[in-house]
Structure formats: structure tokens, C-alpha cells
Length: 381
Figure 1 (cartoon, one colour):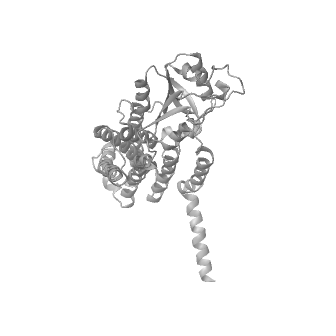
Figure 2 (cartoon, helix red, strand yellow):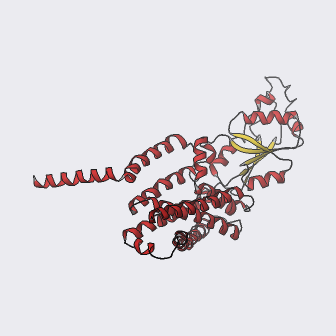
Figure 3 (cartoon, helix red, strand yellow):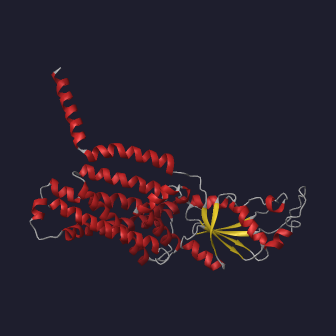
């Protein structure tokens, strides 16, 4: 009986303590709520409206009709037009678009071999074209997006030709760039870098200031001439080297064990990785000024880690998510670094091609360092 009363006393004590610990209580409510919204609303494996470009070398009305027929499938949406094949290839490499449709100059002639375009009788079945009517060049580094575009390979053109297609000849040729074999590991290994760095970099620094307070070192730091910005920089610099080592391990072993190619510039990769590490570390510092214990710091890390995995494009195609989820993903540093590392490692993209994501990471890092410094000043007061 006495044992039960003691257990009850501890039980009610923990409840009161949880009620006073507003941060932990908020995490208890917010983590399942956010995960429910992410999995139930934002996550969608059905890829639709993939942004693509078009190079219409035919310049014909038939080409414009064919574009509308393809658009009606809702698999892709034409967002850019290019004059040459080279322009389209550069756009795919820079991920301005995920694929590009090339319509040849003899498009009308290719279609006419099945009869007369738009004039064939409904019962005609003499579709004898020996060549595809066009070609798709596709970014194969994202296997889900590539599979969605590949579904158009044997797309019937009965609405355009009013004839039964010859199934022995595909409607479109498919050229898969960067991952022609569509190996999932080629897509996964570079994506692991932002995921692992998000977890380790934020977690390490999120506990930095809290650990100083728990060990009683904060009073000593207050009495030193160290400025808040200097303290922030001193905290994050050692972890920069840790992040670089982790990146080298993931990509190095990915190449040796899984034969994941690296096609880009090492200097471009170094610059992109430093930007992301800086952004992640400053976010961890902001968390460390908000948390009152290392447990809270770890909870905040999980709160950011899960959306970074689910919304960044690591597991599910970015294009498949609804617009509100895409807007949230744009706030996360992992989203921008994922695009950069896949672009550099797999598509040999230049930093100038990825300047939007680089600028976003740089701005995030500067704002995070300023916010952490201001928060730390308030704590000193």
C-alpha cells in the first residue's frame, strides 16, 4: 500500500512537471500532429505535373496540338520552351525542368505515314509509322520522376490521328540522362548526405549552449570578454570538419560499394556542403538558445529532421506534393542542399546553375547566426 502511494506521488509530480515544461508539452502535441499532416496530406507518390520543356523544331500546328494532348494527361506540364536541343539539355542539367520533349522538323511527315493527319477514318488501322514522333530527354537521377515521364513512351495518339497505333513502335523515344539504368541507389546515396548532416549538425549544436548551462560553465562565459557572435562561431567551427568527414564517407563508400558515380566538380561540392553545414549549425544554435535542457534540444532536432526527410524530395518526389507542402519544404535547408548535391554529383551542374539554392542557404545561415546571437544576448541579460 505504501509502495502504491509513493508511485502515485511520483506520478503526479511528473504530471505537474510536464505541465510546467511548456516546450516538452508542445512537442508531445506537435510531433504527432505534424507527422499526421505530412503523411496524410503532403506525401504523394503519384507524380503529376512534372515541369518539362519543349523544343518544337517543326513549328507546325500539329506540334502545338500534340503538346496539348500530352498536357491533358496531367503527367507533365510544359513550363519552358527552348530553341535548340543544347538549351534543353542545359536546362535539364540545371534542373530548370525535369525533362524536355524534342519534336523533330519532320513531325508532320512522320505522322502522315499513318495516313493523313486528322483525316483518317475512325475504322482505319493502318498506322505504319516506322519512327517515333519525338524524343524525351529525361533527368533519370530521380527514379520516380523518370518513371512518370517514361509512362508516356507508348502514349496512344488516337485523339490526334483518329487511328489505332502500331504497338510495335513506341510513340516517343526515351533518353535517360545521368542514371540510364534507373538504379535507386544512385538517387538515394547523394540524398543521404543532407539527411545525415541535418541530424548530426543540428543535434550537436542544439545541445551546445544547453550543455554549458547544465555543467555550470555559462557563468564563466558571461564574465569573459567573449562576444556572443564569437561564441557562436567558436561553437560551430569544429563541427564543420565533422560534417565534411561525414560527406566524404557517404559519397566515398557510395562510389566504392554501390558504384554511385560522381560527375561534378569537387570545389562546387565543397562550396555547397559548407553552405549547408553552416545553415544547419546556425539552426542548431538557435535551438540551443530556445531549449532549457538537452532533451528539449533533441526533440527540436527531431521536429526538423522528419519534415526534412519527407518534404525535401529525398523519399518522395517534390513535384508530387501539394503547393502548401512545397512552400514549407522551401524553408528547410535540406531541400536546397538535396537539389545541389544531386545536381553536382550526378548531373555535373555548376554553382551558377544552382545559384537559387546556394543563395537560399547563404541567407538562411546569416539569418540563423544573427538570431542565435540576439537570443544569446537576451539569455545573458
